[in-house]
Image (cartoon, rainbow, N blue to C red; front, side):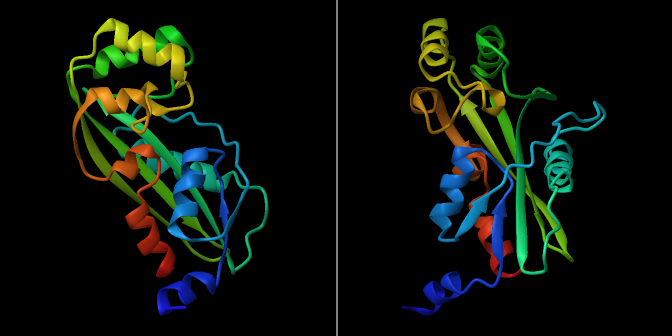
Length: 197
């Protein structure tokens, strides 16, 4: 066992992931940390004055504050929020086919930003950080948009798409920044923050 493997195995905190997102669970597991899942089920409303990265920062902290258990000193709660920001507007999770279609039509042929904020909270400490990725979509045609929505039903995803799904394969021309941030966790930053928490 090398020193890093030992450090991960003997990580002094019990990690609680306050998210039901299967993508966040997959990414955290891939980092090598053990954790349990306890979604916080926080209300995801925010004040309309908030812009860009301020929205997921506010929501990640709101989710952390909604956690009902009392955190011990050796426990870390991880909460996160991801938004898609295009032309000075936030695109949340679409509620249905029509809203998903409208979102993808907005993103088609344009660059948009994806902001993910993460809040780490223990019994005596809290830090919040965020990352930004730029995503460039080709001009999507109506058939592609409708095929994607009908077959992948991305109604649990900000902006109405999953970068790791079919629409990402055929539609994304370029990404600037972290791919994993677009999936829902800036894993490089998260790893660095966890091992120095």
